[in-house]
Length: 299
Image 1: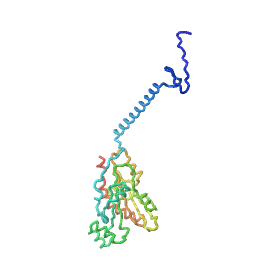
Image 2: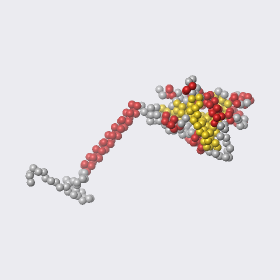
Image 3: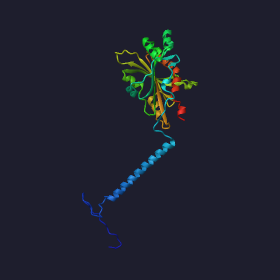
Image 4: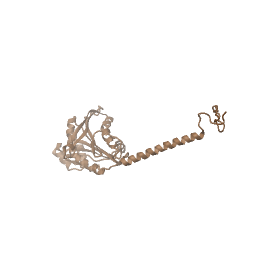
């Protein structure tokens, strides 16, 4: 054999479970040091990739000023600052705090629930009695008047939420159904109710639902319910594709929304629309006064 020819090394076959002698490596089996080296390299690569991803994400968030969490926005004024007199509509209920369990279910700590009456539809005697009474006295006077013209009475609710990107937790579609009422008709209507000079800016889309009572023993009248939202300065009627979509805007650091809801016991939606629009035309200047001015908040 030529001395310059390298010797041929024949791999040693090692039976399963047998440790190779020192210096001998079984074919296809890496040494412990090789395995440790490969594991260390894989760990370093993964760690570097995670660090790079985190740095890239943080840089993107900072450079684009993205906000995954929202800062709370307080109302411009306490909700109870809404006037007890809204044009011809007069408050006849006392502002009360909810039971803690109901408040938890509502998902809000800032809210307003009131009854108003249209003094234009009252007798002169009843109108004088209410107008010259305190809020507490008005509540008692109304209770003693007996059943009033349902066209003269409206229930108003304003609930305020802030600092969250969750969807609306409390809407009539679900709540009335849980109380034994079934939606009979459902529609989105467009009402000119905002205090704007430009006619094009006065309109708001509102959800209007007629509920019928499914519990025979109550013999309740149909309930006409309308609601819509102000969210970050804009008006929406859809709690998911309107409110939640706006709240999840990553370019806005702050967030709030308010639900405006009306209820009447009128028999038809046409009658309810007339009454609700009249009330809101008088109420919206006050509602907008207590809600945030988004142009100032978002500076």
